[in-house]
Length: 322
Image (cartoon, rainbow, N blue to C red; front, side):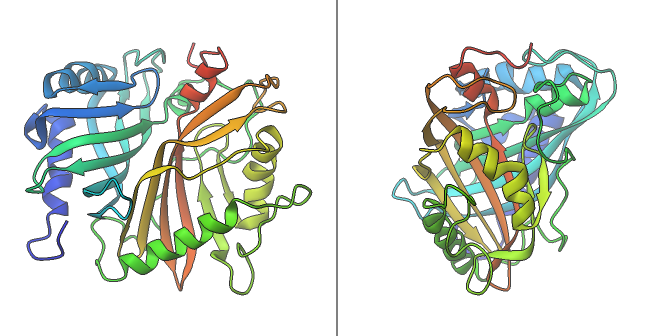
């Protein structure tokens, strides 16, 4: 995605809005392929996307529309290449119909979404996508707890960036923003099994701001500062999956003060201890991951995270949506 005017990001974001609001598929290439969270998984072709993704969402959420929080784009630093549009959004409407196993509440719902869209050569159409909709959180909003009281952090709707500039931000500095994230990811692989700490994460020379905010999917929830992140997520996750290996990203982009990475799957791991109320199974598992970051003064200030926990628990033989 070139930096020359006119900026293509607003038109692409509007194309996504029309896709779901007006059933206008013009942003999709005819042979577009979408890899989505479980239980939808892979959907191929414009017609199938309209029938198997757009139509069910419109039927379940009356008045369906998107409320984007972050819209960024740029060239992929990974070998897979391509120009990508990346979004953090909510799908908003009255939850009047069942959606992929989630029974309706009859109330207003904000369905959290993370999206990576690869663009055609001319930059005008989507040719492939990875999308995670937080269906367990939609279930929670409908009054049913997927984790039977074993959730960790605070459950909130994803907030917009504190700087209120996540929609097509000024583009300068994207490479430097991604550099910070990649430095963090490199250090995160090694950790102290007692404290769950990793060198280079916090303090002088660290990659995380002292007042970092981390916004996670249903079950993990959101937390504040590194200590909160460890207490509400990292401790439980590394105890359950001590051999986890991350990375394996198909896309990494930086755009202005923002960066985003995703792997499909990103993590491979073995379950060694109970997690979110599920007993350890000694099972080999994979996890689809999306991370979106805001950088301030050379450190990560905010991190929005989507994880496909429906697929993770499906691998354990458990359907958490029913």
